Amino acid sequence: MLNNQLLIHIGYPKTASTWLQQGIFKDEKMGFFSPWRGHWSDSIAVDQFITVNSFSFSAENAYAAFENGLKEGEKKHLCTVLSQEMLSCNFMDQSGYWGKEVAQRLHQVFPKAKILIVIREQKSMIFSAYGHYIRKGGRHSIEQLISTKNIKSGLYPLLRLYCLEYHYLINYYYNLFGENQVLVLPFELLKKDKNLYLQKICQFVGIENQSFDNIPSKETNVNYKAATLAIHRKINNFILFQDKRLISSSNSWRWIIIWKILRLLDNTLPEELQNKAKSQIKDFIQEYTENMFVESNQKTSELININLRDFGYDLMDK
Image (cartoon, rainbow, N blue to C red; front, side, top):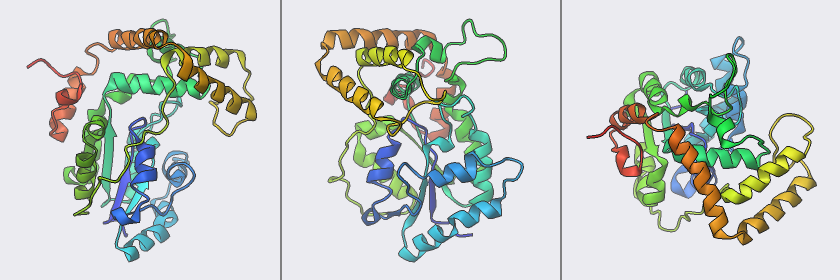
């Protein structure tokens, strides 16, 4: 199987995956090749590894779906990339916690592939995920999104916070693929030093002597500010959806107009109001998650040999 030069980027969501997919992994001059690029990430990965019937999953059939792309990448002498952030999990789906099962399937199909995992400090991740949830039509408050308080047995919040205990997924991929075959980077490194972040990815797959100075650091999928999100949530609660799924930008002209109005509000509402709303959300996240991820972050920091305290993660006191 041709997977020695395959890089599989599994997420996490909300870690600048779109920027990597659109600005880096499709750039052959950088040494990468993305033969399965769709209009949004590599949707073929969802078909073959996530939504596939567990009882009829076949490693041989899955590999066949990727074989031509792998051969083309080999002919070009480039690093072929399969990038789909939902391979790790999907916060916006109550059944989207499939990380272990997907890891097993990936290893069955591509046992020699290299794996890229990008993590993000948990409080920042939750705040960003909440903004994304509201933009997609979500109606819950931040408390309803993550809190287990007053939830009946057998039910659970949409965002289950155990998926942000990163050491579990990292250690599992280490055991499957080998520690040297897995690169874990904090999203915060990209914000702090884009060149070093990209250099680590390139070195991991054997790409050398690249210059990153002309690569823009443009943010994608930027959320509205907090007060605007509060207005958006109220609108969501008054609008009837055709089904219970979250919306997408192609659903209707109605949402396109609403989003344009909200963008205008986002640029005109007083910053004092925006900051107050932001503080309310962040204060709840801080209070609810206090010390929740300390032990996991300590283990993650040791696993990946990066001092995550330097990037704002909660770790055990020295």
